[in-house]
Amino acid sequence: AEASGNERLLLTAAVAAAKINIDKAYEVDKLVPVMDWFNLMTYDFHGSWDQNRAHHSSLNSKDNEKDDTMYIDFAVKYYQKLGMPANKMMLGLGTYGRGDTPAMPYTGFKGESGFVAYYESCIQIVCEKMKETWDAKQLVPFITGPYNQPKAGVENVRSMKYKANYIKQNNLGGAMIWTLDMDDFRGQFCCQGKFPLIKTIKAVLHGQLKLLPKEKMCSTCPTKEYKDFKPNSQSQPQTTEKPTKKSKKSKRDAEGPTPEDVCEELKDGQWPDPTDCKSYFLCRGVGSQWGEQKREICYAGSYFDPNDKTCKWVGADKINCEELVEGYENPVAGVTGSPGDDADDV
Image (cartoon, rainbow, N blue to C red; front, side, top):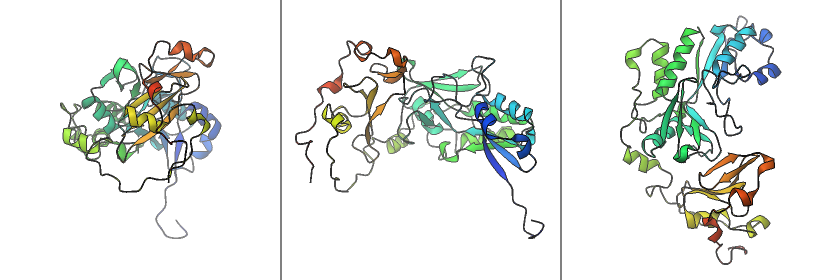
């Protein structure tokens, strides 16, 4: 900048927050002098890839375990211990939630299993009658579906207040948001105005508490918006494209119904695979342009519970499909492919 006369540019970096990655990846004492600030990715500590029931971005430890390092306060304190000044830390705040299993409740907007944007969680709570609970240790909310399964650690206005106050109390440099488009950016689904989570962070950091969005969500489902945006809504535009040529069935498909067969007959839902208890059929938005039909495989050591509609961990050495699903009348077992499916359609 001195040589060119141009304005000085900033040098920043997004850095991992899990201790195991920090230790492997960074020489913090050498980075600090040359970096303007660091965006701490203090989210995705947990998710459907592990069996930990903790929130993916909690302020505190779930059980106050001494060896627990997967939470925000530990990451901040650990970076400080390694020599990173508080004013160079931007705390990463996610506007989304992570589920315990890939088969967590799904609304269809983001299109990712085990993942829920903030506006999706509002829909699930208000329109789909899921239960929201507050974890007083982790200072974050969770949502649960039928049978209290599966569970997703999400965010709300209350949790963002705690995290924004944490930034102020610890004299951190500020906040980094991931991402803008997963907040209720249109203000349609949560009844808290546009960008309620981001506005909460801004109001707390700037001391403008009168501008804080209300914590309470909609008292009733915003019916029009819900119908307009729900993937299997009849209001979705119909495609005029000609059907593509079908490929031949694989050897596995020949042993049982295809995802297309299952979804056409049973419609939206998660349906157990009659040929393998470790997999299931996922049908989303059947009949709409958002539609998706596929066979999913549960994570290692788990099977798909046909009653709770979720993958459950039992351990690889304990998976006995005949015993685990004994007595369950699988609706997929009666699904058969359409005549002529084995041949190519022209």
